[in-house]
Length: 376
Image: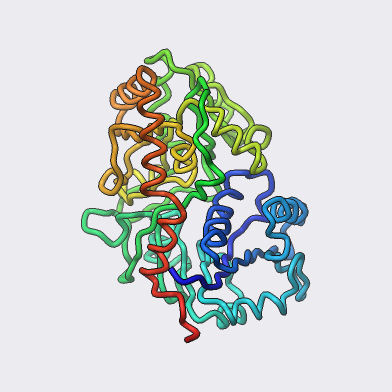
């Protein structure tokens, strides 16, 4: 793949103490850089947003030798990191803008890159909002990419909105995620609800993780395995927290155990495996969504036991990656991993190398987009 220049727009500064979200962006930045690309991260903060995340972002960029390749756009033309004028120059000279969930909405800046690519990491929500007339996140983009591998395919409940969708797995910068031995607990890092609520669409309610997780509350009572969740859960959900703890789930504060990239890295690599419950939206629509977090577990040689969202149509399951749709299947998958951990650990890393390595995922994506050389 010929190297080029990419600008990635994503919300980081407004989400401090979220190591997993930071790693999501780093996978693309580090992955493209390893392929020889010039990379630039663009973020923004509106007037009402606190600015305490800017310093944290600056530290992360310095930590990964990206100190000269980021900017947070502030009101009144101000910025942290690169000045707006340099952001404009890099956008105009880039091969493409990768705009995560359409986060960059400045019309002047969006007019500069030759190719504007929308990256959908929450399949179902944006599409249904558009069909309901609530908001159109996709307007102004030339191409649409989704980690929902089934979006646009027959049998998927996510409306395609009459648009063409390119499926793409989340990449992992494998050199930063080596296989790691050890760990005793099945873990995960998750939000109980998230920033927005369920969606009512065509007579059905498409819910959040909380609505799915309640179905699996008894899991620790059905197996000797240990379960530990770095769970962001609001104090208003105290009743759910109590039910989880009574059922045998150990809960940790994600801001403490996974609040920066290094802590998040340690938490995953210190686990035995992942137990991943998906949002109801992903499950009901069978969108084919697969978590970038789960990809990090696989790369770390940590087996993943994940609720089926349709990803089984695209990824090998049974060893290293096991899927479940109900409580009985979840119990069986956990026991399979617990009883033969070494075999599943090897298979997990092999799946990561074959399917999620940035050196495979990103060239394939660029080829699909036809993005390099658009300047001639």
